[in-house]
Image 1 (tube, protein in one colour):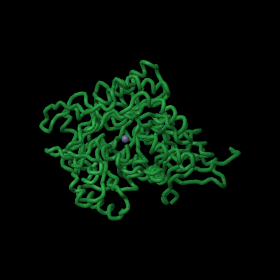
Image 2: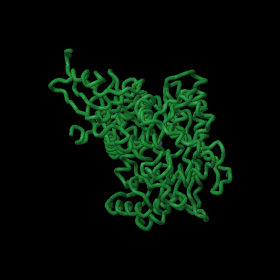
Image 3: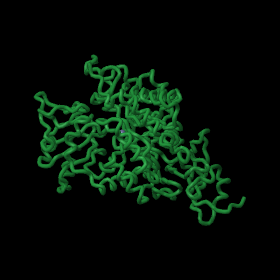
Image 4: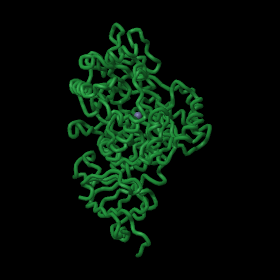
Length: 550
Ligand SMILES: [Zn+2]
């Protein structure tokens, strides 16, 4: 066989998970001009090797389609890494050491900002301002928690913002208070904004630096595309447009523009204008993010039936639905008709149902569409709603890293749900009912490492407690190949990138990740112990480890 042109890149001797419809494996592939020109056995692909072809001997290592994170916040994650970063720390004492050190080494920062603390490290999940006052009395300190639904502020920050015992709670949040009404230093949900709005704005240079950092980190984990789950016009959007215009955006990104909960239909025209003006190259602003509720740990997740109290008795608190369902029943059909993808955040079973109901209204008004609505987080799903995902053509956007027994789950969630705790993260049931499963991390809430996340989808045991804790609702575990398909083809579907990415098939873009081992050899260690050694977008290397050729 003679070829007019040889391949630019050939990978041979590996275990290539193509994630095609048959879930077939190949041992080699060839890339020319950014696309796959051959996928199959070594002998077939070898014919594409010429004098200038880069050949990588895989020696049995696994190659997958590039991972796609269906719900992530890379600018926010990048900013956290630029600032006072607590994600890699655990425990009150350790946090205070990191914060004190950051304040000491950043004397010119007028505000100490950052975050990543874990609710379970504080009694009741609520840290106090006095701890911060003792180490930083003179500058405001404002540190968001790991899930971004709460913040820890010192007295100076509360003072600057004028938050006192007289301040009333905003409709979409809560100020944690002592018995006499004084703020303790923890602010939940919309109450964070009372303080946040006094902070200096992030400069365009900060935001671009954060996105560069976030992108490099995600590439190092094999991620080649993602959906940014909160894109605001003044912040994330500027960074994406700047990097897309300068050619620095190497990832493919779908932007989910943030639905402002204090506004209504009038913002839809703005989305249309922003989609047209900001979709440049690999950045496409085609999704709208609808944040339906908060989280269960602070009772702001919207439930169909009330939370229980610490003694297991029903309360009268069902949490908060943060977007009016009445309004949604007209807004979501309109978004769908305009070709926007609704991207819902829904944690409680009430929020999941309200999201499904909004899509049902769109289907009734517009008939079938290709907007591919998806619901992220899906922590608690009422069993009667599982089949509706398939029926309404709604993708399940799962964050599998959260599906395990750990402190926040065991101490701050299960006791307050009662029997409903068994309705959490029903990934296998959703698959069995025909739902499209996509996956994502919600980084910086938790790790963006897809291999660690897939381990939890398969084992439902936190990597920190391997061999120690029981699996969390083991009937909902899924197979590794299905987890991998969710993180590649499934997320590519949600991102409307499935025509050219998400599987390794001839004609598609060579967006792929090379791992350091055979992922399917279960004797090779835990799934999450595997590392990425090379990441390619359209055949161009965007991350390489020395071990790739070695
Ligand atoms: Zn998120």
